[in-house]
Image 1 (tube, helix red, strand yellow):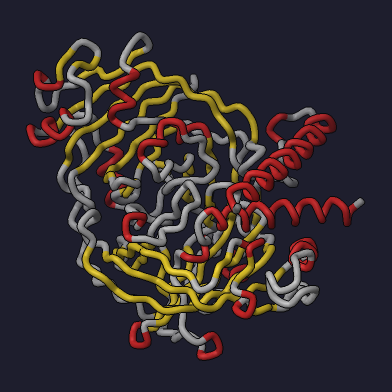
Image 2 (tube, rainbow, N blue to C red; image 1 turned 60 degrees about the horizontal axis):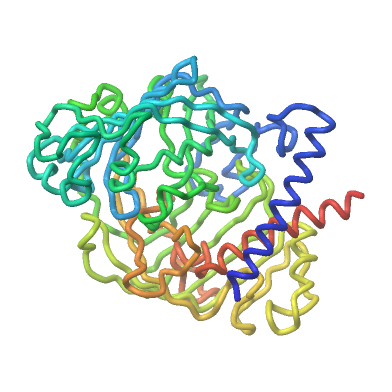
Length: 505
């Protein structure tokens, strides 16, 4: 039922934004103004907008150019974990003539200490126009001209032999010498080799470059490329609407960043071997918050704020949703609470731990008029008190068993994956499992995630969950339960924009 609802809603959002695009294009005649607001620049203080004054947040002003300025080299800042799982580092170089050279180094381990093989990708990129689906993003086309493989040892060669066809571009994998490039693909042949490897550069079909202007005059530039499908078999056909972990400009990155230098100096024959990170035990107690405005597939902008009480096996989570890519225009807030149970260390992702979270209570507050009006249109007994929604007034959805319009079902259980790390300044980071691209809920062990969302930082002090909400909630559930999560997202975006149009005119 929810898949049908989501399909209708997504078409509605797409058609509405396409109308906005045509209107702007007709009046402005500038393809890069589709369908943006005044510009992709915000000087909003993210700390204040998130209500996190007691946390150490960045006061940087964030800007984004459209079309994005890509010239230069962009590198990974840590060992990246992709669904599967796959462990890799990336180094992408873009030239003035639209040509690019990308290096992807794959590893046997979750710390990126044991290189398995590297891919060297050459091609051409053509930015097209501002995205009609993901606000603030640019759509692009890419054309590959060459993909070469370099194996870094006999063990990796044997593993690849089980995935690749016996012959790739005329050469058998068994004859590959470690450290010597093997051409997997060119413009004439090799597509089968790439598909068998699960390789895709569809991430380049959606992009955004953000510049953080720091108070002391410096800047940090980040390149956000399209997300990858969490189902490995769907990866080569997936058209992204969200982002994966950003790359940083090799000349304008955070300091210190020891990984940046190693990745920047790497080549396909000399993959970076990342330094062993200090041990970081998984200590959940306290309050954890987003370090940036986060984006989910199908146009969801949000920040997360969670408090864990391990003694009570309880947690409380707050999702603050926004209508723009810098999280400056709030639309609604969700507060959820429940219990969690810690399981065994993950057998798939070294250093991660399995959890089970149960959500038993959810509260929602509409933060703009269109969202309140949309919620007031729900049927009695289905989404809080009928007709009782008002801007800034929180409602408890527990008595109605959640809210189908928002994709919330109570009670709800999810199988999760958590991991703790220390950043280069030895500040704790918390990684929580990534949401499934198909919208299905990880409500059974075999659907447990194998990759992570953006890291969350620990606030100063140990703020325990408020007794007002009872026990607390998992940092994953509120991305929503299954396909219902997308329904919630698209309904609210559509309702907010549509109602705004009616109110203005």
